[in-house]
Each structure stands twice: as C-alpha cells, then as structure tokens.
Length: 273
Image (tube, one colour):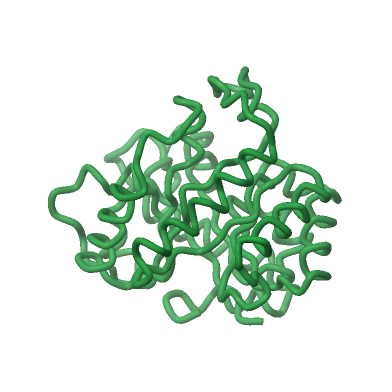
C-alpha cells in the first residue's frame, strides 16, 4: 500500500516552501487575496470541527465551499483532495460542553442525523462540482455506527470499496486505543482499505498505521508550544508552535519512530508519495 503522511499546518504560506505534503484548512486559506503556489501535493481540511464547535452547524453553503475549493485548485495547484462538509460524531460535538480547553455549543442532533447530513453533503458537492476531488468521510463513534454509515453510503449509491480515498472521521481522540484499531479493521473487512486518518499522532501510527493509506497530524505545533522557547536556534519567536524548521524536524523524527512499519517508510518520499 502506498502511504502518505501530510504535515498539518495553520500557515498556508508553507505551501510554497515546505516541499512536503501538507494538510491545510479552508478557514486559514479563505482570507488570502493572493494564494501561494504549492511546491508539493497537499490536501484541504474543510474546517468542519471548528464550524460545529462554535456554531453547532455549518455556516458555509456548499456553493460557497465549492467556489473556494475550485479557486484553491486553480490558483494554488497540486490539490490532491478536499474533505467534504462532514458532521463529526463525538459526544461533545453533539451534546455540547467542555472538552479540555475547548467549549462546544452542541448540535443537539442524533448520530444518524450527522451521518445522513455527511452523506448528503458529499453527494451534493460531487453533483455541483464533479471536477473537484472531494472524498467521502465515514462518521460515527462506535464500531456499529461506522458500519451503519457505510450502509448509508451504499444506499446513496456510493461504493466506498472503489473510492481512491475515504476519510475516517471522529477517531483522532481515541487513536491510541484498541477501539480505534477495531473500527479500522472492521472497515477493512468490508473492503474499505484506502483510508485517511485525520489527526493521527505517533501512537496511532505505531498501532495501525499500516492499515491507513494516508494520515495527517498537527501535533508538532503543540509540541513546539510546550517547549516554551525556540529549539530550532531562532531568536525571532518565543516558541516553535509556528516554526517550519521545527515542524520539518518533528516530521523527520516521526518518520524514524514509525520506521518498523514498512509501508510507512513511504512517508519519507516527501512530495512524491
């Protein structure tokens, strides 16, 4: 399996200079009047987590999102794929409340409604823009819920076993657990093997990285912030939470740590995964 690692970043300017595959969110890009030209392949995060966290709904219409994704494809270039406007299914997203430092207003909908809206959205996006590389995302929280979402896709005319890539939503906070591993194995048993893991950190990659076609992580930024002072040698910033040098070094260390999984060594190919 040809596996790719995308370095998550909230610095869109890195698209033109990092030289490795990146994962960049629409909320960061949409404010740019002049966009950078990508030096390597990259993928687009729709920003759904933030939308549901703050508003409990999507405030951006599919038409608005399609227009921006088309602009990114044409002006930035090298866009591999774009996430849809999906609906995460973690309990705190649905019920609202506090999760660590994050406050959620809550959607106050059911898991099945989140799943229906996720499937409906990718269908709508593809109908509106068949030329754009939107990928389906499976949402749920328990193993059975993920399998139910697969059934919803099947009823809507999607064959997830033939998709070039399928996102796996709502597992990043359980990525080092046996539960997450079981969900991925259950999807593999259904023939859905080209999975992208959102926000997968080192422990998750070590446990089940060989079952993923691709993964992304922004964990380097938190690590850089916790250092409290630059570790890259720079005297121009207080810590390395937004430091490209630190991010690329973190990426290299990550690749070394997951080296025992033979497929994952392909992460080290940079822009040519």
